[in-house]
Length: 64
Image (cartoon, rainbow, N blue to C red; front, side, top):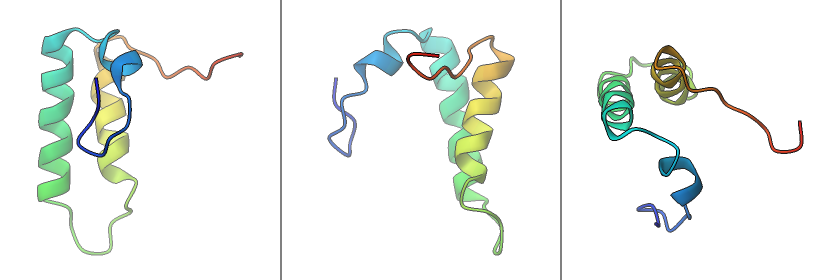
């Protein structure tokens, strides 16, 4: 599966429950839409990860 940017995201979405992906999507869109001036550009990505962590997912680097 390719993202809108052409990146292969199958490895990411194959491991996610659909409901968890939608919840994280909602958090990311809210953060991106209401992003205050002067806020860090990493905020939307961190909000997305926070929702996934709350759902029990963890970010893991291959080989570690």
